[in-house]
Image (cartoon, rainbow, N blue to C red):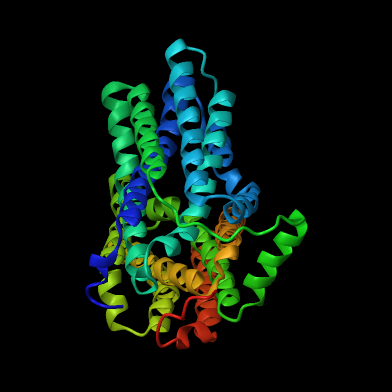
Length: 409
């Protein structure tokens, strides 16, 4: 990528980038504030907060594919603006019901589910819109900007939500999220999206088959999907047992556990900031391989804590698992945008979102293995998963790419 590609990012993309930052921040504040509100105001326990989290993540499994179909049929910027408007309605609904004293846990879960539907549509359409706004050579930088916004929101959103709830009450947190989401929608409303060729609508099943056949039949995209699915499973096997393992085996306090987990967010931000520099200096395929290899190294560092119970090793593990996979997201998003015909980008993006379905699978494996055989066994199981995902991508043609592929279509 040319060193001066940043100067060629047009105004349309700048609007999208700021909208993305606002939307991601609104999402993270809302996600963090909801369980705090549930516990402090509604007396929810672990089971109830688990139900709430399920409601807030279920739309990723249920609606990613329908959102991909819509993103390929209608204006992507308008779809994203409508998604943010839906999230505003859900946040305002929580705010009003809480103010009136009518909010219940089922209503909070239902409104969280509604807002997450908007998150899914936005998340699917945004990567499909980027190639229409920037030149092909600037895609890595543009995707790095998008991911930097996500990691910033990921790191700051929960802390801001907790502070707002603690200082001024839940209403302020949900109000701030609603304002950010409304700002994201307004920014998209002024974005000029280049027109796309009008394609005749066909049967939904036929369009679904077309998208799935393209992704799973492509020699580059298929191993990327498989790698991501295995990575998500292995990571959530690790996540499922880390906190009790850190307390009982590593001897960490609550603040110590928080500090090691915070290294994940630090790694994400470091990776996103370094991504443009790295992608200018390394072969494109080598950058794709960094994320899975970093995940494997992180898992081995965590396994090593079984014999060397060091908080520094645990923190280094989470830093690696944050920094490397961000490079993976940026490079594989660029790859998908490059090789996918514009008319299929929404569905290809939706299938990428569907890979997040591995997360509850990994958590379930971690809970089962941890309960039966202990947390140490789970760390080894997770490491085997990270080994498998690294082998899948390292044996694929994706890592042998010398440069970003030419744009399809």
